[in-house]
Length: 220
Ligand SMILES: Cc1cc2nc3c(=O)[nH]c(=O)nc-3n(C[C@H](O)[C@H](O)[C@H](O)COP(=O)(O)OP(=O)(O)OC[C@H]3O[C@@H](n4cnc5c(N)ncnc54)[C@H](O)[C@@H]3O)c2cc1C
Image (cartoon, rainbow, N blue to C red; front, side):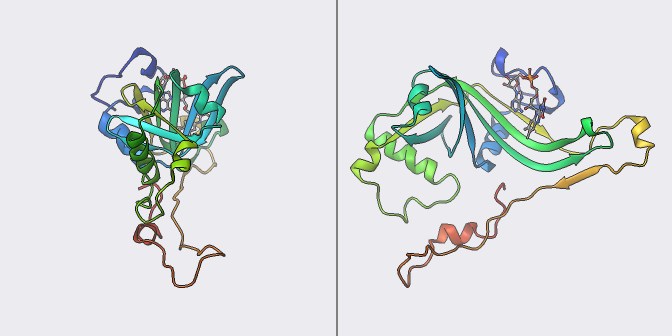
C-alpha cells in the first residue's frame, strides 16, 4: 500500500502489511482528521494509557494536561507510545470471526520532551486548542497561573506508522455461498448545533470557528 519505508524496525508492520502506510503525508492526514490520542506510558505503577487532546506542530505531536497528571509527569523524558484511531465503519462478515472495522489509525513511538520555555509552551497550548477548532483567539487569554498548572509534552513524528482498512469483509468461498448477510455499515460523526451555556450572558454569540464547525464532518 505504501512506497515509503518504515522509520524503524519497531514501526514495521508484520501483520496486515497490505494496510501499512508509512508516508509522512498520509500519517499526518490521519492525525489531522483525528480527535483523541491515546497516550501510553510505563510508570512506576505499571503501564497506563490515557485518552487526551492533541495538536500537531512541525514534526511533533503535542499533548497537555495538569501538572498533577501522573502519566504526563511520568512520561517526561521517556519513550512513550501515542495512538490515534478513527473508526469509519463496521465490517459485517458472514463468519463472526471475520467481522472487522474500517479504520485509520496511527501509532507513534518516541521520546516525550517537556516544553518548559514559556513562549514555546503558550504556542504549543494554542496549537493543541486549535487542533479541532480555532477557538484560542476568541477566548480570554490564559493567566500566568493557568500556564503554571499545565504540562506539555512533545513527541517527534519521526517513528510513526499508519494502518488503514477500507472495504468489504473478507469471507471464505464456502461462506459467500451461504445465506448470511455481509457488508459495511459506515460510521460518520458530525458536530451538532451549538448549545449556549446555561449561565451565558444575553447577546453573546458563538465564535465563527464554532459556527463553521457546526454541522460539519467530525473526521474530515
Ligand atoms: C479500530 C481498530 C480495531 C482493531 N481491532 C483489533 C482486534 O480486535 N484484534 C486485533 O488483533 N487487531 C485489531 N486491530 C488491529 C491492531 O491495531 C493491530 O494492527 C493488529 O492486532 C496487529 O498487531 P501486531 O502487534 O501483531 O502487529 P505488528 O504488525 O507486529 O505491529 C508492528 C508495528 O506496526 C505498527 N502497527 C501495528 N498496528 C498498527 C495500527 N493499528 N496502526 C498503526 N500502526 C500499527 C506499530 O508500530 C507496531 O509496533 C484493530 C485496529 C483498529 C484501528
